[in-house]
Length: 385
Image (cartoon, rainbow, N blue to C red; front, side):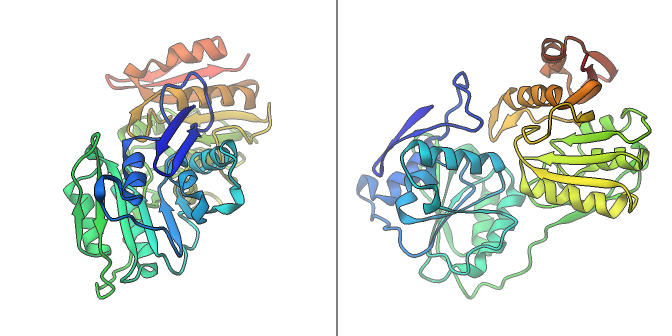
């Protein structure tokens, strides 16, 4: 936990799931810069939040918590961000009901008077969200984006300019920068180009040549990433009524491959991204046999899966949390997988060779073997004894 001090007050904040040993903060200089700017820091004209305040892409609820008195609408693609926001509101004695929480899949407010955008890592997600919110802004809407300098590029500014209106940036403070955008209601509005669909190559097992659906913001939305491609070539060959989990499912191509190879299986797709789970559902429905059972869950890894209920977990774990490199997500996935697996159940993981997942898996499962490898990737198998 850490304390954010701004002109709005002091707030104790933590990421979700909370880990006292996690050195990563629940806010950064970009959040701090935006909040201070709203209050007229350094002689600038203050922005008094009024009307409908929309906070887009708040990573761990820092912005939403600090602005809770104004009844903001939070719009996020992250289940973990929503859980962190709820916990941080309660931690600071604020009413969680004061905030309206929407996912990026929900219909946005009809009118927005103050639009605050935490620039996401994915330019595609930003593009899609600006398209969805453009009809809600008007000539009097105040639009401010924020991010670290390394997150804001010329392409970022061009998106604001093309979809919302004239755009400029601030000076950098603590390696953070603000984006100021003046809405132009006369701008011609084109539809969002998302979702994007492409056909898989012909050498990736059961899903070869199949079409996958990718909503904005998911990892490698415009092509099959090379780690997943390697994984698809080495998935286990199984038959019978297995319960399979595609953990961190992205567009669902791994779980769909398992379903095509074993139509008797039940496949559960899990991701903390609402966009990812929507993508997985469309990919599965378009390709799996009609009687193959599929379930789709937005959540915190395996937290909502009953213990000892799963036969096989397949995962390509992320090793970034926004811009930070961390193995915390993978560790959480591995521990959750072990709890959810039946005796004799297996976790199959693909990862960059240098990440050393085999060490963690041996510690958690007591065993780990390398199924396949190349100079960059390894496929590992751990069995619950």
